[in-house]
Image (cartoon, rainbow, N blue to C red; front, side):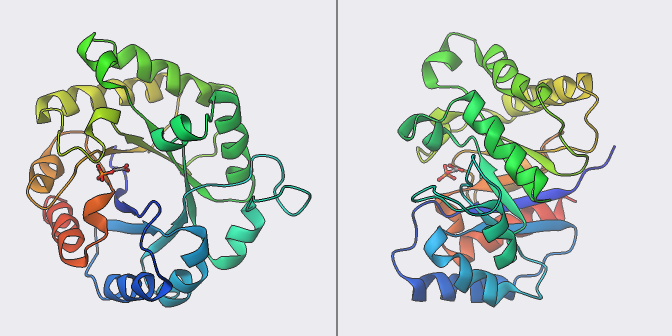
Length: 250
Ligand code: PGA
């Protein structure tokens, strides 16, 4: 089954200023994308600016987090709700990124609550999974992914709203990546797990040190439906080259 190919920029806590975010968004608005769905995820303070620039373009604007406890408003200091995100024109949320799991101690049950809030507001979810270096070296990758994916069986996941990003933690921001053969095998495993859950049409993206040099190889790899790109999404020319690599492999 053909799934939607996506290349999504995870801007993390970048850039430092609203004017640079505005510039990046303006650059993105001129990028040619046809077969590939292109997205970016500014920080909360830049969401409104970026969503404004990209309104009416095919570029998908996402958030990096969402309130787990309410969909609308309430006494949740520091949080941002699904309703507030939708109101800005946000279409998706990244949930389960290893930086959130590690620095903010987000556990399975919290991630499930966040996903439920996003789906209830009709937002899509990019759910990140991945193993540590120690788990990779101990050959535990697939069992770690099985465990992370298993939470998806505990609630109703609406059709067409879920994207998986496989991101080996040791590949994030390090310049290291698994071999293409390893990524192909891991994506095949993830897809078989999703099929066993009777999920259809879920795109499985690869993330972790994707750059303009290795993008073409990942783009041509069986079962790699796109990329979640951190550092290389912050420079328009490199991000454009990554998008072009996935476009031409489509
Ligand atoms: P990276 O980050 O491309 O800088 O490795 C990817 C991610 O964390 O999503």
